[in-house]
Image (cartoon, rainbow, N blue to C red; front, side):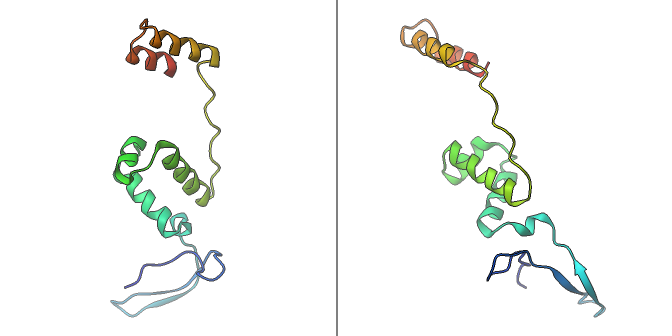
Length: 124
């Protein structure tokens, strides 16, 4: 049995299901049936969603699983969010000013801060 596709392979428009059939009793229903949002995803996007779920939504685990950097994983996630019809949230505002970042980096370079302490400070 072939999987149901949600996008037209010719023009990429959303497909509509118009007939349902029961193999057990041979009943058929005709009408207009909506596919779920996941059917709007292409194969690559759907594979990414499956990986994301398998990794419990932890981007660091997704990075390791598919061998991509954080920005690449985040870009794929944003692509899926848009394909599902949602808007990608605004990026978080920096919690630490650029001046504070420079100061923290200088403190690391001069040995006044450990890497762990710097990470804590940069995360706010």
